[in-house]
Each structure stands twice: as C-alpha cells, then as structure tokens.
Length: 274
Ligand code: MF3
Ligand code: CO
Ligand code: CO
Image (cartoon, rainbow, N blue to C red; front, side):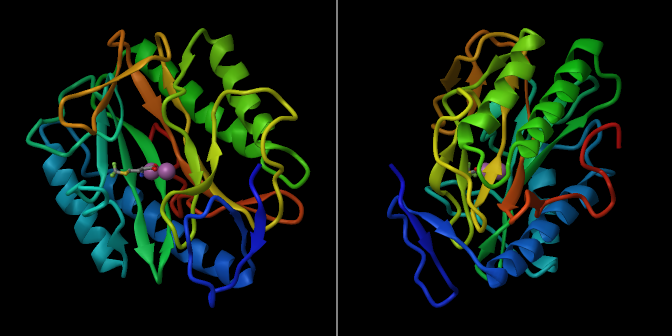
C-alpha cells in the first residue's frame, strides 16, 4: 500500500515509494516542463519525414529542449546516452536513436522528457511516414483513444484500476494486446516515481487518485499479443510476435474536479494526421 505525502518545493524529492501530493507551485512547474515537451514534439512534426535518421531526430530534439531552457532527462539516465527514444514499427518503447533512416510506411513513436526548473515533462506521440497502411493507422488511432479514455478516468475518487480498465477494455475490443511489462509512473521533480500506472486492470482497484498527484499515462498497444522481448542492447523492447506497436503519453496532474494535461500540444498536434 502506497502512503500519500503532501510535498512542497522545500522538500528533497526521494524515491521512497510514497505518492507525492503537490501544491500550486508543483502545477506551475509541471505546466512549464510539459509545455516545453509538447512544443518539442510540435517542432519535430515537420522534420520527421522519409530519409531522416533517428539520430538526426535526437539531435534536433536535444537542440529544441536546450533552446527552450530544458535539459533532456534521458541523457545519461541509467546509461541511456540520448535525448529521446525513437521506437519504430514493432519496437514497443525505448528505441535508441541511430543511423536508421525513416522509410515510407513506417510508424514511429518519439518520447521526450525535458527537465525545466527541476520538473519533468514526459510525453510521446506517434508519427506516420508517407503512405502508412490502414492496419497501422487504425492501431495508432485506437492507441490515442486508449490514452484519452484513460485520462477521462483520472479524477479524485477514482482508482488507478479505473484508468487501466478503460484502456484495456477499449484496446481488447479491437483485439489488440496491451503491454504489461512497461507502465506509466508518478513524476514531478523525479522522472520515475510511485505509483506505477498500469494500463490493464480491474475497476475499483489500485491506488486512489487524489488532488495533487502527478503521473503519466502511456499505453503501449500491439496489433498482436502483449508479450515483449528485450534486445541485446538492453534498452530496445520489441513485440515478441513482431506485430506493430503504438504508444502515446501525456503527463497529468489530478485537480479537485478532474485532471490537467500538462503536455497538451500548444498547436493542437496531439495526434495524427498532423
Ligand atoms: N520517457 C520514457 C518514459 O515514458 C522513459 C525513457 S527512459 C530512457 O518513461 F532511458 F529509455 F530514455
Ligand atoms: Co513516461
Ligand atoms: Co516518456
């Protein structure tokens, strides 16, 4: 059972398993970090095209974060040496930017987390390269809808299981697999904190949602089975059955009446077509 602790900027953030409840200063900090994260993805939209390498996307993402007064949280995080994750086609998450060129028909998730004044804004979107098949487009649409249905359940009095159930039931209605091996997470002045935000579960179960909680929702949905496999590099997670996988992520804060999405696109580019 997680304990809930009210925190202020004066407290040293610690990964002690407690769920932090933030005040107005926290919301202000997260709004700034979240808006930079969303701005970075907005600015990448025109750049992410056929022929561009994921290393070039990484460099651009880093420049945009630094220009906006942020530092990429992933740079040097547990040995990860890049400024974003780039996960193409059957890559579920944590794809490492490299010299792979994007090609016609690819779908790619780009996940960025700038730190601004100590606060983490964590968000990802799918980008479609050229002529993408109808099956892949449908997966991307349903995955975005899964995220938004989860967010709809994020309000005081509900539990994490309500968020999870909304995501799982919609995905499975479309006969897709919900990845279990990776979760959303509490965040704030820490990148990955309690609670775990699972994307499959039963209504009325799990931690209760209270005003001041900050966490991500980031469902990974596969056309095939939920199982993933880790590649030799220790980061890249792929679908075991090699089916396509999609993901969207927002960072949110629970308010008195519902939630605030910190990472909403200022340009309205939250989901394709862009
Ligand atoms: N941004 C990812 C998340 O949503 C975490 C990436 S950690 C990395 O939690 F080291 F792989 F970059
Ligand atoms: Co995250
Ligand atoms: Co992320």
